[in-house]
Length: 194
Image 1 (cartoon, rainbow, N blue to C red):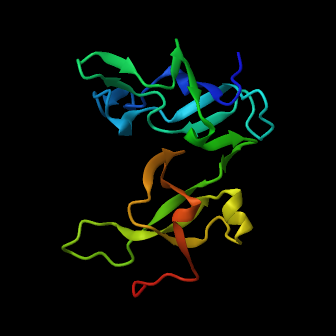
Image 2: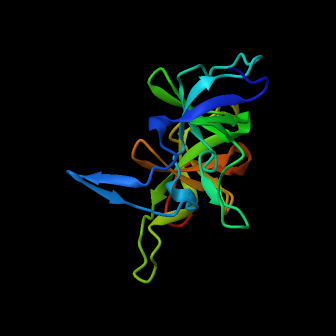
Image 3: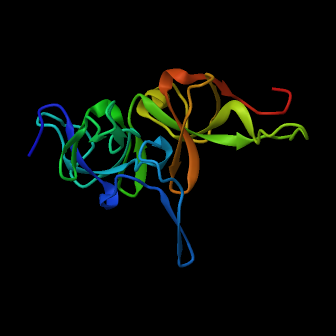
């Protein structure tokens, strides 16, 4: 089964939600709401690529996808529904712009126009502030081809537009997904005065 324009995927580990943490031999449910976007599974396995696709993503690759791909919701009458990506059983059809990263050759690769930023800790914590990260500042963690062509590299410190970050947890790292156009400045050094 192949689509002319879309990727066919299934949720990694067969689960729509990633809402259970394991501590020793105990399980902790982090969220019981099906509508909680923070608890949806964001990892998919490629079943097939589009018919005329000649890119890097291959059958069997693991992808990081949009948080709504596997999510269920309730319609206006309170009936449980699958989102528009659901095809049947555990099969989903997604557009290429719903893919942010793909895992191949033992590494994550960012898909244009998306990249991932690792937030940096505040250099000096204010006693009255609850913020622990520098605002709108981070380190390029997964870099796309667009940014490489602009001369940026993994590990570069950058500033980004407010409200452009979207939180993901990938391989135990808290990362912000954003678009290339949301990166505003490459910082040559970072001090509290910046």
